[in-house]
Length: 165
Length: 165
DNA sequence: CTTGACTCTGGAGTTGCTACAGGGTTTCCA
DNA sequence: TGGAAACCCTGTAGCAACTCCAGAGTCAAG
Image (cartoon, rainbow over all chains, first blue to last red; front, side, top):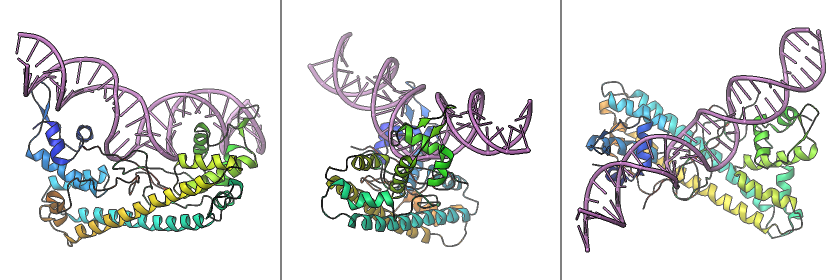
């Protein structure tokens, strides 16, 4: 089948499939005379696997590792368990952070119930003189990601680091 | 004061301060003879404000709006409230998603309690033939971001979209 | 006068895509 | 047979919020 069909069958955008190929998650597809990629059931399975992992919010690097195990069925799968445990920890950490964050935001929101002048806005004042810590090793330290992103549908990711010494 | 001191006092990396200037969140700093940036208390306050907002996981665009209100103290702050409410919704949505995700991951983890050969690994098999839906409008739809990111310390963000029709 | 700490600019890299532009191929229908 | 629509190709740039680097200049101390 051609890339469009594969895309449809797995619910993956065409661009994304080509991207996975570039990234080495999918093997280079064979080509027709006219230079179109052609795929078979093996590709389809592999892509479905990848997508299932992505829907569980794994990174491409994590998925690479899992694919590696799939390709070597005789090795122990202990590391699969380890990887998954780590991933679960990340998610749990992030949940904890966000709950914390939600609490802070709700507290902040309480500062200004009714519409006033900005000068008297409890929220702006609070943010200006902050009971909320200014910087600290606050948000993350733990490998996790943020709250919202630009586009419409299906947003999943972003990153930031932060140096200190 | 110079940029290094400002950095230290606010717990912000130097590069980030310069980045905020480029982005227009901080005004262009005055310069010394030797072309070093110099800052005063006003800059410090503004940067602290920005960092407090960032620690609440707001985007730079959201912060831009808040700064705007800070700079026009006579206008109504209603929109501040609205913005914060929207932000709170984003966070709440993301929490819901992650809890859902955590449940799925724990279920998956149950599939393989002990170390076996990868061929018999319940997790790999489950991911291969998935009770977890393959694609679907699963993860987000709602403006939010993901679970973990590459670097060491202080990770905050990432993004992804997903086209369908 | 040298060393080292600090600063400058500009550009590339991060993640996982998405969205073109500018072209070629296939297929269908009149 | 011919022409348009629908599909495919490559390559490049963009997103968010930084981070990191190279190559250079500045400044204070010894």
